[in-house]
Image 1 (cartoon, rainbow, N blue to C red):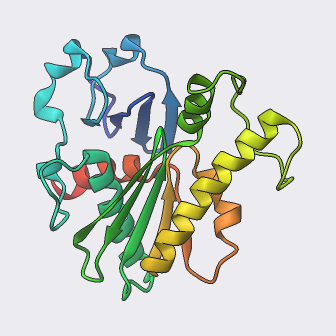
Image 2: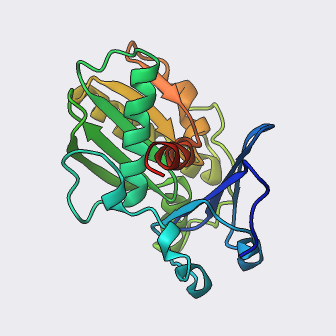
Length: 233
């Protein structure tokens, strides 16, 4: 791997369906989310983590890999996905920096291939969570599991609550199921809600119609990777 220019840091989080990139230099921080591309591994990585399949050529850079053991989140079971741990820890540290009220803990909703819900206690320890099929995965499951329902191209749901057209009804139904799951979790854990992941922007407007605190950062895990490298080089 070639060396990065001085003062440039580049991180990668390998997800279940996409690769998530972050690059930081004197000009700022940039994020990019794309399908796997081995050609992009030619540059040096400051740090990387993975929950999806790891290419063999990247395994050779194991000394730069961030694993669950590297994340200073109290109470993590050994099977917890590193993306959930990084996201929850980043949400907690960002909440402290913003002086948010953490007296009821924290709820992280990561809307990616899987909608993962992670709950932290008022002292920042991992309590547990829920795993739910994400927006695209739910739509795909309906298509594959039935004879009559069509393939649905990705698009945000229309504003109509009860559409007549099948495709629109599928999108709206999946969207409402995700919103309802997060809201129900909020009722049980009235802490600060952080939204991250590729579909977080689909959900934020609906979830902000609540008295509870909602913070949006689609790139929370990548910021967490940078923070880990800064705090624990």
